[in-house]
Figure 1 (cartoon, rainbow, N blue to C red):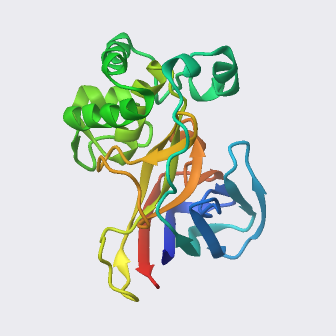
Figure 2 (figure 1 turned 180 degrees about the vertical axis):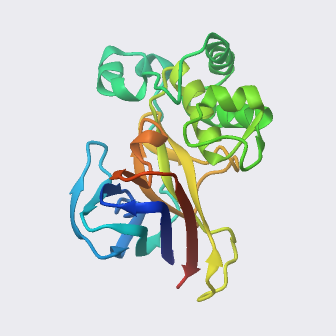
Length: 279
């Protein structure tokens, strides 16, 4: 078991004073069978009133608004989380079970295409080929391997608005793109799958108490009789190094910060993530 401290700081600088802003932060790690949140706080400068709720997908949201004129806004989420490796796999579902009416009805929203994970005939052909030679669980890993063969990891080549299809055409992208393209393949095969946002400590043998530059990360959860996680960017099962935050159909359901503001001009954005292994 690891104990990790994650500090995620987002700074906005506006070109002219903003008179009001309304925001939602999805920056609170979730407690589940693999991880336990010891503490979390989301703070803003200037200070704001906030309230929390859990959204439709089970992600904790901190909502806040600011009505005094301001030219800068800083949002900092500080968390301490205990993580464990995933437990042993449960019974694996067969293709016939996945194609049953009960499963399709239960996971309908996680089988449908989205703007960032659109349906495409050539992707469906890839999924069909993988499904012919693999069971559902192995097909998840095979899909991730295919994605890694199609995309080079290269920051700055796509944006948060990009779809998996955009990344495939470019042949490169970041973790968000690897996940979106993987979701397209999985859903084409009839495997319910969702996008998971979170953090990754970059060092497997991390020193205790040493802060390092971490990063926001994303991976997939697939349902093949039970939910389980796989990281298509690194083509690996997740470990104690991973801290999960949000889950949904694609990036749009789990964006760390969403908001609108009343003002003129563009916004400069700076994001810093620091991760420390505490135990």
